Image (cartoon, rainbow, N blue to C red):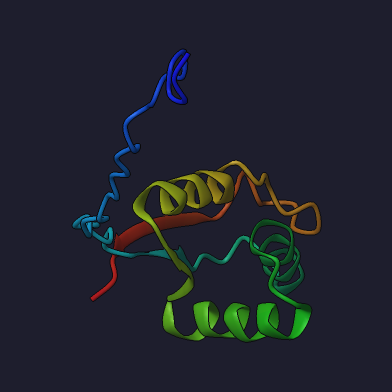
Length: 115
């Protein structure tokens, strides 16, 4: 029997390396969630809503409540279109202000492209 008899020699493995191609990732354009003023909701209501829905601290909520009161509108969040729609809908579903008897429902909000 010769030295290499009965021994199978395997070819050297071929190692293929993949070079990652950069994918063209398109960043979605941001949208503003805009809270609109009315006379049927208190500052306390606005502050509480902004805290619960957006996580804004009371001080920031007060600033936004003041701005919506004096300017008629305030941007409360800038995010993706899908999340902006969700947050607008959450504002619309937040319910009436329990401290104001004439209040019949939630505040109004809209979304708009951020420029």
